[in-house]
Length: 224
Image 1 (spheres, helix red, strand yellow):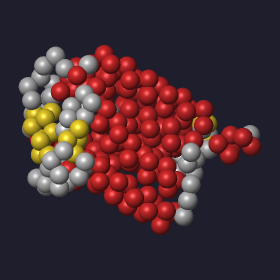
Image 2 (tube, helix red, strand yellow):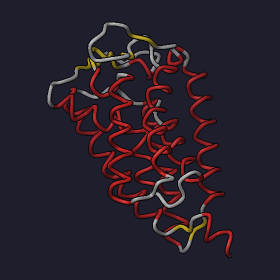
Image 3 (tube, rainbow, N blue to C red):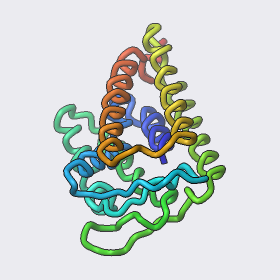
Image 4 (cartoon, rainbow, N blue to C red):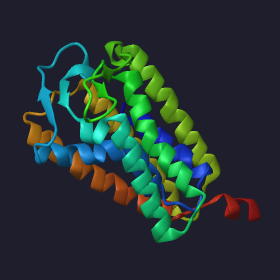
């Protein structure tokens, strides 16, 4: 699941309009934000597989209980939502952020093969294997992404050209990245995979924060 996670962040704007889009995107991506850091620290492990007919199955997730287990995702979600409330006092965003973080585990369980841990301390792994079908995965993610785009686009309105074109630059950037993953080759090394994820996260977060500041929220749209 890639653009499906972004879809959750886009759609979350309707429930927490005062929260920055960068934060709302970071919530459903939080497990994947932590994962590259844990890979570099050798706390978690992944194996890169040769390219085959299925672009979704080029990684074998050997161990990622601290970033992706259900128990830890709940803990990360509570911590992220609590930190956000401490800094902003925006109560409406707390359940939205928590549910956004939790949604990552739910969506990954649907898409992954049985490699999703429940806790860091038990061997049970689950996964329903949507990734086994490339057409089904692309159809589900594309539909989710389209809905997320529609919700954000109809919930907010551009204040200026940055708000208008910056939003669509983000959409195009994510679409191109997704298409590239479908047709590209696996990363050469695990550190390259991790650093690519970290750099991409920083760029996308900054773009989301910047463009969202140039779009009016629901209250301003209604007043106009």
